[in-house]
Image 1 (cartoon, helix red, strand yellow):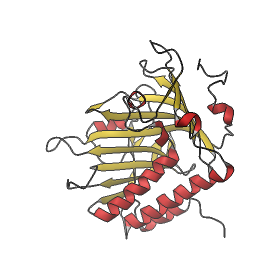
Image 2: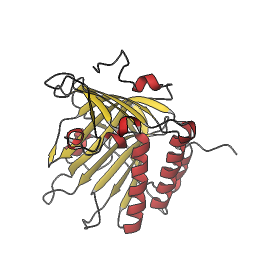
Image 3: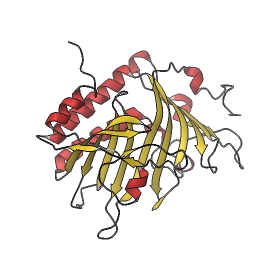
Length: 296
């Protein structure tokens, strides 16, 4: 039997019958206080994505269950059909109560393929802001005692160093270690969040078609907890899934406003721009001795 594509057919079918679980939006509208659905075009200046129009589909039955079906099918698709990819990753995170400036990184990721003996491999080059520009990081699962290799593009640290991905230095200014980087890990975490929110209940789910990230049409879905409870970890969770690529290209999560009528508080957001799948990355792409890199 021919497999139904992850989004191109399955998500459209669900759009007619129910709503999925996840969704993402973008910086400009969200930080302006809007918690509703928006579509966006990426800005090269600061990572924000201005809004345009999007339409909602009213859920019919069991949105969480159908969402989990989509998420699990998506995870299966990634693990089976996606070997590697390149992208520009834009990240903003709340660290010690402060949301930092957007960080732009050129990334290369080769997915783990256990049957082929290929470990999860990640290369990052920081593009901006100036405080991190030209920093390069490589991590290959299991290599060098599972340590990452890094160097700064400027400043005092000009030598190449090996660090524990979970150690203080590597985690400074980060919510997650490099070992959790990548689209597959993102989808896996979303599946976990879906299972947990199904268990605790009480969430509203909405589905929006024809939203955009960087001019590309996406499926945008939003989960909201109207009431704050001890067991709920976020107020709003959003994700965009690219209709053509069939992978998530943006995720954002917010906690509750600090005052009545206030704006949701951004906790974390990750956007993947210019994604290219199955480009044929090799061991050389994750080798610090690659002459295209600046490791010394």
